[in-house]
Length: 383
Ligand code: HEM
Image (cartoon, rainbow, N blue to C red; front, side, top):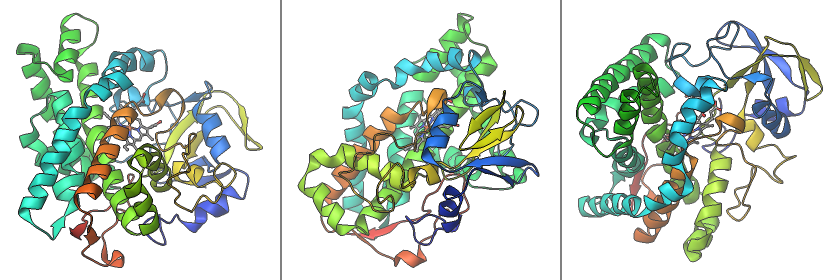
């Protein structure tokens, strides 16, 4: 993934979009179809002939950390997927996350107070972008925030394209940690999501291992993703001062600004894998049953057929059909929460620090170009 600048996209993706879908050899040694156009990606993600079950023979194995079957309902098909996902949908519904807005505002304001007191320069990733979603997901799940160093480093190891010898043990360590925590919640339930899962295990609605798999996915997906979008959004806005000025002048723009930043940055830059269960036509080619299909959400979100001038950041664009959260049955469960976190964090950060500026030349920033999830490892700022 060679991005020409922090928010640019690899030239190869635009080339791919100009051609019909083709097959490319991936790290698992197999050839899979690659879809790069917005319409093709959305069509396939919503197609019932397409499977997300990574336990199937021939499914593209492209994430080095987790073994097949370890990513719970995110890598299952309906009805198994729907049964587990439905146990969580109310936890992440718009009313539920809207009710969390005051808590999120409190978390953001507290971190901004600490930042101000500590004085600059400061690393905005460590001091703000990572703690905001981590504190929120810890509160929701009932995971002690004091353990954040432990699970943040492991999650980052899984979501950076590390070799299996690094990512595998990191995943296993998180599993052991959550196993202990869930056992505690079974014995001594509190008012949190993991305790509610533990109660379902007690009532026989859910196996213990199923609950554990769900906990793993929620903890890993719930902080690392939003943290990267947040840090990259700050970097992007600082390098688009005209757009930042519009956002500052009109706080009501925050909602559409977040949607556009999600589209523009598309941090889930790694290949998104599926497998065809039956023959289908897509983008003018015939995919056979058993073929692996790999999608680029990054490319789809920069497709000129779907978004005019796709490489221009336009906070007023309101890109309704972007695929930064995926599409179809597996569309991001935590998207409402992520949106609110980003809206609150960006609005309050820029309101509090009108003079916020980078404290290092952009060219010297350490970008996660090699990761499944894009991001910036450190963001030194002054104000
Ligand atoms: C801005 C931040 C986020 C981005 C860009 C993002 C992106 C995505 C994407 C692209 C998918 C689809 C994966 C696929 O189809 O294979 C997904 C699924 C998922 N996300 Fe997020 N996500 C974010 C935040 C969150 C948060 C805060 C949570 C909270 C726990 C979360 C939980 C999940 C879960 C559980 C799934 C799997 C849903 C399913 O398979 O039914 N995500 N996310």
